[in-house]
Length: 173
Ligand code: K2U
Ligand code: ZN
Image (cartoon, rainbow, N blue to C red):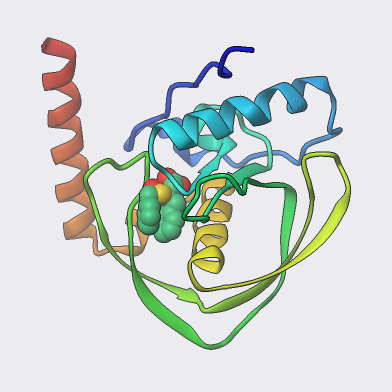
């Protein structure tokens, strides 16, 4: 059985990253085929999370693996944050769609999320630490939000021009 095909990751400032994803209507064969491809894409890119938006699929589906051993995948379908702590902390974030850029973003330190798992079974997840940050980061993607939007317009414009320039050079090479 060969490894599932990876998918191309949209790069900021691609406008498709600002699409608001629709709920997954049914955990059907199409979704079940997409999940392993999203996981393969995330692992290959050394990410700890990936939202369907980032692979140009605009449905509410997230894959995550924050384990050291990279073998504990989490699938969140139609996730809803039911509770988020008032306690917040600013942490360094990166994004597979914004390569090479890291900056501080403030997130709730603890959250409770309700979602369907990869089998379509309803689950409730209590998360804190890196998992809580990752879920919040991925759920932003599902509403078309990229973490650079939390930064100042000056920083965001510098990032945009840097990535557009890098994209042009990559296309010329
Ligand atoms: O692009 C993505 O959505 C994957 C994100 C997930 C993430 C961002 C910030 C903080 C936690 C998770 C990352 O690119 S995965 C790369 C990474 C790995 C370890 C720690 C932080 C970021
Ligand atoms: Zn991201």
